[in-house]
Image 1 (cartoon, rainbow, N blue to C red):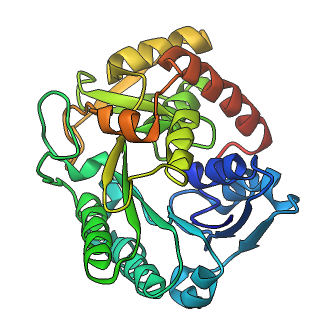
Image 2 (cartoon, helix red, strand yellow; image 1 turned 180 degrees about the horizontal axis):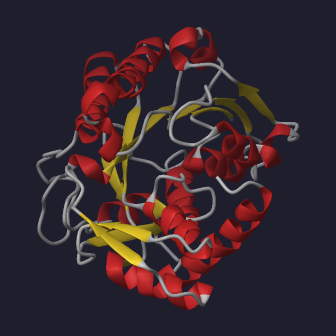
Length: 318
């Protein structure tokens, strides 16, 4: 198959491209404009294994400046992972890039997908669209985003739905729950915690640490994402992609202390505005339809991210 992956130099996108290329029958065209919270040097590291691959081609441009119709007409499947992530930075004057890259770019791709032979248009969304919820959350829960970021991702979901309903664009929506692992963005908690404790800096913690998250290791996330391409009965549906286990943030920090052999100097800050207190994914639909089952325990995933962080800090301590 010919597969188009937007956001291919990002955390999830780069791992997904590598996973897709394991199938010798597939070719991948990746698009990335090299902006956002991942610095370009780290994006280049993310792309290292892809740039020399004979079945991978990179387009270093924004979705807003390319001929999307021509690209989608060449593709069998689109994975739309491009966008500006992050809750805290989506407030105030920095909102414009969120609107452009999360809403307008999504609409442009969907418009280009009309009337083509595309088999699937797979949209990467987020658990941030749920807001405050109690207990396990299924895909049927009422969305109630708490941040401008969550609002833009929910808008992208609605665009997928209306283009599917009105024009038959074969859209599928994935809602990711706190993905972590090697290549994680520098602004994300795991990367930041490891870097701070490994470089003897105060570990900055938003809130009291009692907040819990459904942590999804990157290999599990990519496995579930790749499975959508060949699974039946997915078009027009939404799937939660969650992890093998949940934990509180303070327990996560204690585990990082054990792995690194260092004591964290925790600096407690006010809870971040727009972040839910707890997340807990009901992944039964993904299990039943996609055959998705997360395998990687939190301790194992943290050790793999620690090994990555040691290499990154030696090369370029971003």
